[in-house]
Image (cartoon, rainbow, N blue to C red; front, side, top):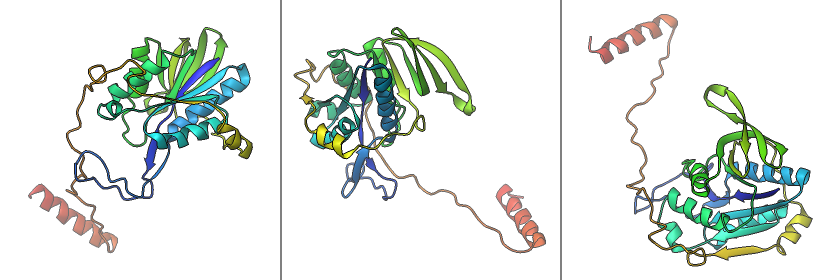
Length: 260
C-alpha cells in the first residue's frame, strides 16, 4: 500500500506566552520552538504500522520554508521512504484552500492508495486541509479516525469519533483520505540508525511553477482580518466565610446583579 502523509511544522506555544505582532495578523515568533503538529505524528504512526503489515511506501509532504525539513527528516528517520516539501511565496499568501490546492497538485503527481493527515493543526485549529484536499483529489474521506483496518486492496473499515463520545464504524473505498485522531496509537521515537539513514533518503522540493500553479490558481477564498487577545470582561469571585455568611453574601450578590 502506497501512503502519503501530510505533515505540518507548528510553533510550540504550550509553555510560552502568545502575543500578537504589530501587523495584527500573526503571533510573535521570536524564541518560539517549532515541532511536528501533534496529530500528524499519529497519522505518520498509522501509516508506518500499515506499511509494516502490508508493505508498500510512505511518502511525507509538507508546505513551508527550509526549516520544515527538520520535521520531514524526523519522519524519514522513523521509517518513511521519501519526503516532499512545497515552498513558494504564493503558498504563504493564501489560506487553507491555497495550502490544500498545492498539496493536491503535488499528491496527484504521485502514486497513492491512501492519504493521511492529522485531524487538526495545533496552531490554527482549522481542521480544513483534510476534507478540502479530499474534495480536490475527488476521493472519499473520513475525519477524526481512531482505528483503521484493511479489508482488501479496495476497501478499509474505520472507526471514527463523533460528538459525545459516540463512535462510528464504516467502510470506505480506496483511494481515500483519512484525518487521524490524537491518541489513536503510540507514535514511535526515531532510532539513532534511523536518524543516520534519513539523510540518504530523497527529499524533493517543488515551487508553484514546478506544480504548474500560478497566483490565480492559488488565490485564497478567505482573508484574515485581524488577530487579537480577547478582553477580560468578567471574572470569578470567591466568597469566603461560614456557611451562613456565604449564603447571605451570595443572596446579596444575586439581588445586586438582578437589580432587585
